[in-house]
Image 1 (cartoon, rainbow, N blue to C red):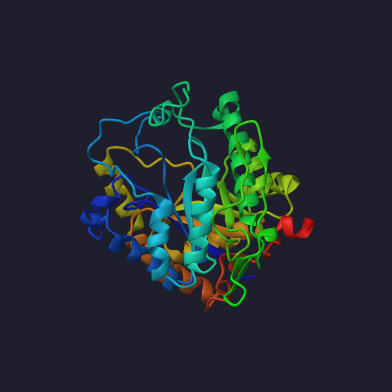
Image 2 (image 1 turned 60 degrees about the vertical axis):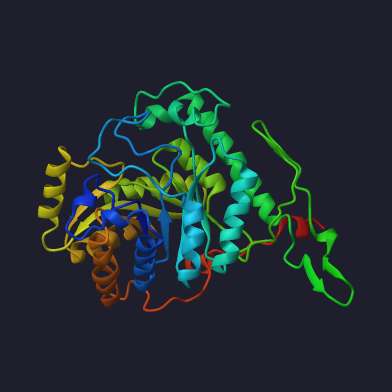
Length: 387
């Protein structure tokens, strides 16, 4: 069975000093051409999709609020808008931007992702993300959160405040899915002879009413080409596993070993037999990968620490590791390049060639939708079924 491969794109790479790599292009980070180059390279490598990071505050080494560092990349583009800009420049690769559920209206997010699915011809996804930071709540002035004094971990997920944010995120995803269904597939008639553009009986109020918000609907955007764009969630512990199992099509997990991967797969499968399980890895690749990473660590003043396992080595060794994780039940991988474009090139040229030589990766795109690439069925509108 062919492996699923994706890359997570974030600025100059996942190492804080990646912008100082010889192959980096720090002056181009905030340009459409830079991002177009990364995504078209990923498509050249026949990857399933790219994810684009986003947040409601600038990058920081602190758990809450900005820091005073000036030697690391700060600032991002809006991920959904960036993905829409990149869609016409690509043809088969999936585009999965991050959009925060906290402080944002699910109606706006649903319409944005549906629009991305239309302009990409059915290649859109969405990675919903919560924001528990008091500093980010301050941008909006509608809610007040307690300051965070830790970056993450199991203790954070036990916090009742964080549990409420995950519940809110679940309602946001459910609302988006209902809005995507609110136009039936054939609601648009476009009959010039009769003067009927739409069949009003095939547009539906969703009438969602939950603890956090209520949305009447229908959407302003016709049903997406995929029916419902792919929803993907990053999860490190039981609470986000539960969120992903209930609301996502793909879950990104962070095992450190094959045994841990097997345990995570078992736990997730108890919650959902259907969600696709991808493992996240930060990767530094090539013959001098150790030396490159050590140099970046020295420039940053600290050894890189990540929520995901960090791999440093040759693409042959990485291929061995991916296949070992696959044997533990992992279905795909979201690789986080330590520095781009270099580690992205290593993935799209070296790793894919190595896997293809082992008959473990595609030699061409099999379909033109993200759901098709991931083997996910196209859902029928719930309102069409009811009617």
